Image 1: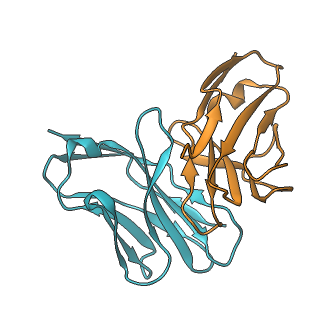
Image 2: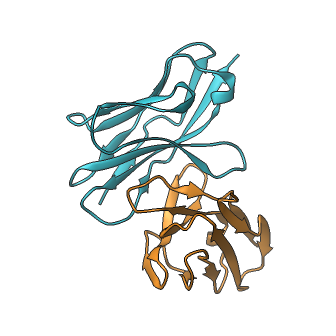
Image 3: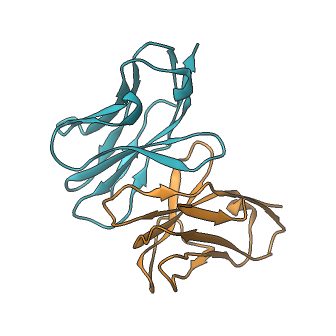
Length: 112
Length: 114
């Protein structure tokens, strides 16, 4: 089992560029999440999804968009990259909301 | 809204000594509580959860966590620390009757000294 796979692992963007962070899971989990991790700040929830076609905002959604057209995939889109979006981004999934989440290994994004 | 406090930035412990990582939570209803561990350049890995039942939860690799409802704490413990336990540890809470969001603490760096 691959679990949760995130691509790319590293990326450098210029201010104003856009990109999509990919996330796919092969565990048939209903719930999927996007977090950002900044040093000393823990994880902040950006968006989450409880199933295909359903998404909802988390704690820090501004500057990001998501879609969930299939159970497996949950891409995160940055439309106009800003230096404040420099972070490590983690995708996670769980069978239901009260179950442990399985995490990918993250995408390290720098915006210069 | 739910929240977690992990009061210590770093916990230093000698190898073989007991390890404790503290967590205090806040929810409006009953909590679901989790501990995760993160190694360098990796995602978080699940360690333990508390949903209902015994207040002492035993997990893998000798880790356990103690739920205390009156003090709203969920401390992570290990009787004898190993150098390989050096990592970043996160406590997380979800309100059982609330939304689907998990609130994470800021994390505790554990350093086990040989």
